[in-house]
Length: 428
Image (cartoon, rainbow, N blue to C red; front, side, top):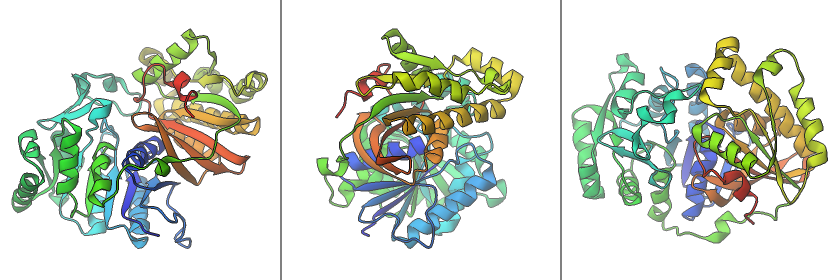
């Protein structure tokens, strides 16, 4: 195996987001689900990059740290000289982690003393200026992310956010590499990294307003054992190794079978996508968490509704997506974790039933939902294919439920245009 880069993603949609950018820039990339068996060193043959996708973004801190360290250990054993810890482009995390604790644990695992941190992804309207994260023209704290049901983000100052997550006993500090330094190029960034190291800083939030900024940061970070970033930084890494965009890197087997969408995300973007799909005449069925809590078998009901409607020419949609006020009302009655778990369990059962009934092309919206569905489908690896929208590619996976395998798109809740669900199935 010619492994160059080892990546650890804190959720499954984040993993495909990162792998998508690596593939577009010419890196042959395999995404594995969970940490591979240490007794199976050939789990990712003949590729340039491996993305280990974890379901750790909202896990307990100790669990997220243990999984991430195990992933780093496996990747280094397979030959990776740099570890890329992929976090969400909106830097969302539980209040006491998990980005800070995992980043510190990876720093210990790798024997590193400094890491550049940037969730910037300008192609998807995520930029960092003066250490503050913007979503489009809004500060993160003014964006719809302030209403996220599991990881609300009310502070856009990433220096402050990350510093609050670090262990005070370790004494690691967070600095800033601002846009003026980044614009001067890799040499200037390298000098700034050296100065921050001398001053005792272990992490630095890096501004990035453009793809060129990300390429400069990738060049300047080449010798660092650890980088912490959204998927944007990945666009500059393949060229560093002499790789160029290559259509063969994204080639998948021909698609087939019926088409379906499962949506568990309640983000503003996914709400708009669900509304557009229904307004366009798409057949859709809502899953109600309160009925789930009352003992109704919504999965069986959804599958009974879906089976006679399955079609290769048009998609159907099963969704638990709802507006923020509706989500809050459900959480007040059931609790946020319990409500989320009920929906994940139901949608993952529906995913299994749909594939058994002939679905060969499946879009799943939402990081937690994607994680639950991928695990229920028994998927161990994803081959990364054509991009649908920035950060969301089609993938192909082997599954015991379908001999031909499954074409799968795992969509972060915040990603994609309003017509995403319809357009996804118009791609080859």
